[in-house]
Length: 474
Image 1 (tube, helix red, strand yellow):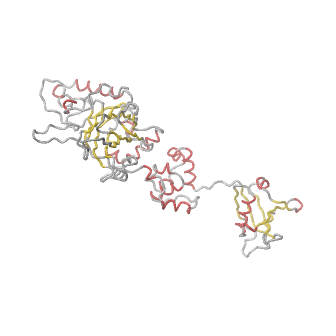
Image 2 (cartoon, rainbow, N blue to C red):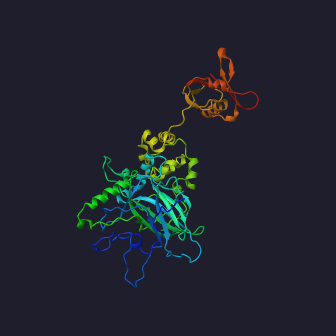
């Protein structure tokens, strides 16, 4: 299997060997690139990052010297990222293998979109069900171990690798830059993304991981073959410029070196990192499951709460989350993380179905309305005045509503005992007055054939033999 696709060797003695400047008769200063170090004076020790990541995709020829390099990618096309260690990682042993963990993610470059990144990604998820923003092409990749693709973190992948071995991961970006623009009238500019790699040391069991290095590069994603057309168009546009104007642009390079950057932070609302990485200061890595399971306190409160209790409009976001989790809406709880009770109650049935899917959306709509299951049979019952067990203030002639779901004799007996204030175990016989005043023993078949909203007057009498009661429905 061919993995390297006639790309240059993974290690170079200097950046100039990896990216030679174009031949030109005019002398000019070397470009100031954010991804390349400038030459240090002789005698001063040069600092090297512990890791180097190279994206095998050409940079844009239309970037000026003071601007960061920009790389155009095609949607869904596998791109190789070569990963190598420089031997300067902290605590790197001279002998033996040292495996590290890297997280590769696609994030927004614009600060405005970073603040709403979670909402933007959730919106993309519902508009593209089943799709991911970032994927690994595992068959093409070399040297990666235990790749993990979490189903809820659409823009993040995780894997282990050995810096002393040849490592190459092929990634695919499935979202295009124009999917996150405010106005979609055609011809708009797409928003830029960043491909960022955060590398951590793999500590022992219970030990917090050590952050080793982070690097990123600026990219824009186009529909298939759109990046090639954009590259060609910009190259032709620059070539038509006068020679003095062309000197203001950076020369394009065949590959993109990821520049060092701070580790990705959750402060701006960025998606959480996959499980297995505890919190690190000044940023935190949270498991997506941390928001879904119920805490012990919530689990204890769940059974005590009435199942038909509706959500209060005054509920805060944490109380709304607890209400959702107690009713088995953990799959939707992450979407409504910042919703109050009033926000959730404003959503229509159609909105809930679009956000949560048909089954959970309908169930959530009924739960928000506080609807109980419709009874299969409704009866109206009153106690016969002057009965053996009638009490003062029983309300002669006032009917009470009685609902049945199972349509069985034990269920009807229990409901009558509850309404009449009798011990359920002491109702020994239940009968109904039939033609010519006969008493017919009530059976399950009789209850199933009763008409809905039938009215009964219940006569209470003493049962023969042991202490108990018999009920007659008239």
